[in-house]
Length: 553
Image (cartoon, rainbow, N blue to C red; front, side, top):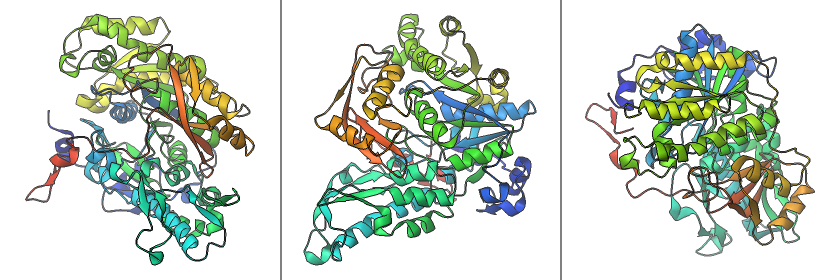
């Protein structure tokens, strides 16, 4: 089997005008970026009016070194639905350069289930993430300039909370000192960088309904506090207009295609372990407007991405999925059962039974916490034995959930037909989504309800002063909670794989994201600026003598 990149480079994509026509998007509503990418103007489509499509959420178990294939399944499912005559559209997140050059990889799918053009999507694409980075850092520059130019707002330099960002893993920039070298270089203070995908501007960008809503959200961003303890906002700094100007073109969703020509909107890319992990509301609504079925995904496992998709995005945007797909592999489940990566190809029913608890917890959450109809998509590997597959099916049958084997990586849409049929079946039955917590609860209780109901925690521990902060934030409004937690475990300890029990979630920091409209609770050792691994993926990436990119997955 050729590599993902080789498959993508060998493909013969259709001109983007043909894809737009297939999606029902008039030519006047698209702005082509070359032959195979276009920006779509949602204003021209009446997005925000009645949406006829069914929304399908694709999520997964907690990720492992074995891989699960959530984006690949999303693409293959949409292609499978297209093959059986349904008008399907994809709504996916944009990749971040951090994972692309680090260790996780891109976000364009894999094998025969990819979105094209793969290289552009995984690298600069249409520049959306660069625009978000620029808007974030413009605000940072204007805050520091305000302090330098007389500080009329009486900002306490020790209490500037707005951080800079960049779309790259760079641990060296987590905590830095700025303004050194004399009076003309600004006020010396502690500062730092987050990765763009974890920034509040990314969250604002993805949750905004339109340009007007975007500007209102930007205005509300809290950037600092005065010496008297009063909040200073982006509006106080007069930065929202210029930031909106930088984001104007980026706010339009990006239209691309799958290998099989299914229209795909790839737009926005927050990390689910730090931010809310969903593509933009605008892109999702556009897909719901133009298709009969919209397939979307949320980042990492269902404890992170799906929880935030349902409790934050759906609540804010008035959306509700008709079905949920949970992606798993036998190999990943054995990894959750304690099997080293080198031995995952061997049958091990004992480890599989232990590790399958992770999958069962996610299924139970979708059923019991969120009242969602569920199907499990099991990506099949040649090493999977019939006994292993039967065990997975048996355990899920006890919960009233069907398993559908997927081979979309090797076969594209053809390998996703069984899953597509089951999803269509689930969509036929009405469901009424519920939430993990009511908005009227206190923030402390919301955190506890997520930790206990979704993660399975026994207790929640709060660092010194956190409860006081939460009570102050409660007075500002009824905010949803965005939990920042390791993606590798249901707990806040990445080493506790499978389905851990009797554990405590430790909240060490909380941060108001007023523009996004939620409160971020940092748990365990999670950080907003990742580092590169010992051997970054960047080392294998190059451009050959013909100008072709090589080594990109």
